[in-house]
Structures are given as structure tokens and as C-alpha cells.
Image (cartoon, rainbow, N blue to C red; front, side, top):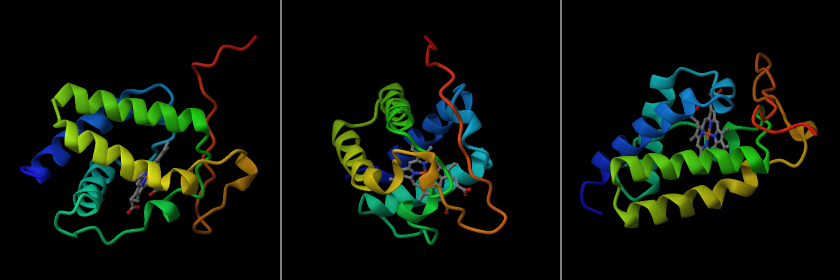
Amino acid sequence: MENLEYWVKRVTEEFYELVYADEWLKRVFTVDQKVITSQQIDFMIGALGGEKRYGGKSPADAHPHIFVSEEMWERRENLLIDAMTKVGAPLELKSRWLKIDLAFKRHIVMSDSSQCKKRFFSDEIIQVANPFKKVS
Ligand code: HEM
């Protein structure tokens, strides 16, 4: 794809701006915004067939300490779609990116927080209730 690096950078930067402004997700992303933005840029460029610069954990192993529910997954994907729309990303990028995300979904989404596992001794389990959910 033409300008792959340019688009991945634009989308990822916009995406994390939205994530770190989101009342729910900003409480889940306790890591530094600049650091995760640059890791994700490297990861996605590699996953989309560009230069392989990412040497970190696979997405399947990066989140066992985070309780990602189906609802949280959907919120993240919606912010990603919003970011792509906002920067005017090419349709081809949108569909390929969402397919890659989907391939990792079953490794990341959990049905219950008891499935969370620390990666390191010092890890905190991250479980944040949806602040948008109406309580009846
Ligand atoms: C709702 C879903 C998701 C949430 C809430 C989430 C959240 C996070 C957070 C908070 C971290 C930092 C973990 C830490 O270092 O302590 C992280 C790391 C990471 N995420 Fe996600 N993520 C989600 C989905 C995805 C997807 C779909 C992908 C890729 C297709 C992905 C790829 C990665 C990668 C590669 C890292 C590791 C960066 C590194 O430490 O080297 N994540 N994620």
C-alpha cells in the first residue's frame, strides 16, 4: 500500500488522542501515551506488511492482566474507526487493519475478570467498570 507508514502514524496518533480522552479507556491505559503510540505504530506497520521494527510482546501476550470485555473491545474498535474517519485513511487500510485486530480478539477479550493473569510479579490487574453503563 502506498504511504503505509504515513497513514499508520496518522491513524495511531489520532486513535490514542481519542483513547486518552475517553472517560472509560483512559483509566485502562495507565501507560505513557507517547510510548504506546510509538510501539503501536511499529507493530501495525509490520503487521500490515511494512518494515518489521516491532520487537515487543505479541498482542496475544500483552494484555492478560487487563479485563477486556466484549463491550470494552467494541468501544476501542469504535474509537479506532473514528480515528480512521477523522484523518481520512484509505478504505483499504481500514479493512485490513480491522481484520488484523479481529484476528487477536479471541486472545484479548475475556468473559470474566477471574481470567486475568499478571504478566510480572509487579503487574496490577486492570479492571475498570464501564462508566457509561446505566444502572437500573
Ligand atoms: C479493548 C482492547 C484493548 C485494550 C484495552 C488494550 C490495551 C493495552 C494496554 C493498556 C497496553 C499496555 C500494557 C502494558 O505495557 O502494561 C497494551 C499493549 C499492547 N497492545 Fe493493546 N489493547 C487492546 C487491544 C489490542 C489490539 C486489538 C492489538 C493489536 C492488534 C493490541 C496490541 C498491543 C500491543 C502489541 C501491545 C504491547 C506493547 C508492548 O508492551 O510492547 N492491543 N494494550
